[in-house]
Length: 210
Image (cartoon, rainbow, N blue to C red; front, side, top):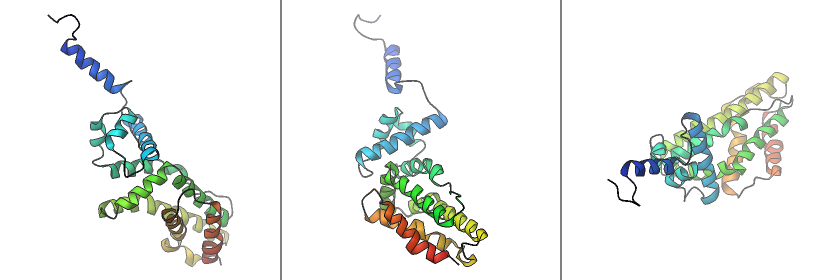
């Protein structure tokens, strides 16, 4: 028999479970979306250096176990959170003008870097110095997709007669993203639009035109 004022063990367990979830249990895409949003929010609040998995879990109203079952460290979690935001900015515009398409791509990437994901990118790039395996993740998830977007733009420009055929290489397609990333890592956000115009008009267009 339980003493008046005390709570029986089954009720205590139930209360703990309810307090821990603080709402309906989420699974799959809904849980991942909440965790990714919480990760970017936490990055905005404290920066990559101070980001802790347990704080992300609290912000996402999830258990630490649910994070560590999927991500073994914060670098992997942040990489997935940033990758989750990429589809919108990786869609190459098709305005009928190679210059405008390239500028649109750069603006899409700049918008990403100017937001919470930018802090994540800074942290990931710093972490790659100590972790070569993470550099491979960054390269395959972020760098190569960006190059492919620019290569597609140049290929369309070649069909229209605006771009020389010999410019359709990964090396040339990487020039714009590389210059943007270099500026971002060396300067504080936001990235001025004038910088994007200079990259396009002073470097890329002279490099690829007939």
